[in-house]
Length: 199
Length: 199
Image (cartoon, rainbow over all chains, first blue to last red; front, side):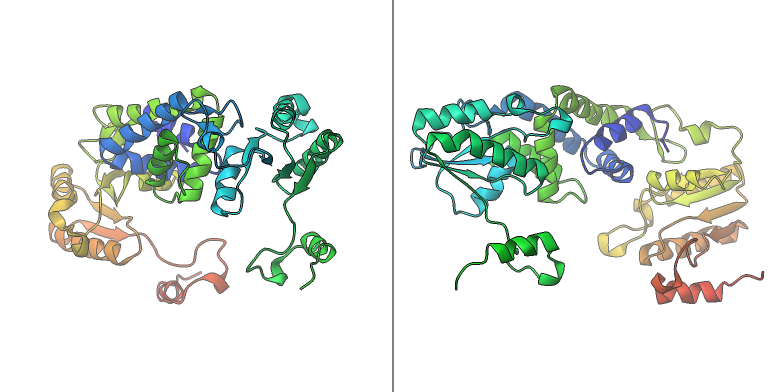
């Protein structure tokens, strides 16, 4: 149900377009913004424009940056011959948090999904191939989601890069650390059994 | 962990100030906005400013409006002698959805909460009294939250208006429709027993 106040209904509608925000949440946020000091709305409004004006894809790895090249690609300490392939720039944040990776990233900006019309030319595969050739990359780690599209994309990249003599690996799959076996699904458990390691 | 891109980190911070949005959600929303067409950010940005510029409190009932007076107060079909007192304009939406109320509203813009320094002068009690006197209101229905502050505010208003010969009522408390007794807390169940009605 709408409030019949044009500007308020419009804000609720716009907030509702954001992923994961239902109508109730959008209403709650809109009322919070109305109740708050003008500053909150003004700063948020400006931030939205700034982010779109200032942030763009890194021409090298296709992560986000507000410079000519992103901080990872500009870092001379990072190995050029080790690439980690991710779907989205947000995934880089997760991997950086693990503090286990010293190479560079390559953002595909998507995964293969024929049903959605996303083929090899719609994601940054050509650019990945070019980087592998240009820098003589030795290993490519595939850090894609463990779903159908992620698996298909991993297989495709393996086929693409194997003939070049590149080592293609992917993230280990198994029981999460701190995970309770009761709550692990049977496919994950099957994979964990299959890939068991010697103590 | 921050992305070290000033505009992006700023947007994540601003989104994180909204109620109920944690850091992860704020990140997810910021990345969605970055990925989307410029239009989405632009429209949302404009909506935020519009809502603050165009929407203000109705001088009569203190709900929100973008006109001189809100649509409920301007509606001649609504009874002037029946007032429903709510804490926030958002509550009006909930009551309107029930399609059971034909009177007018009065928004307190808060409830009594001595711990937060909110006394009778910080909420719209004086204005409520004025409306009751001016229109000869016959009944005031208190639709406040069923918590400590809501109860205290209800008692205060009762004491304020009873001497004027106004009927002061509040929403019935009991088992929610469709509710499972297993999941109803014992205080609600106690209240439902106390206020049981003849079939």
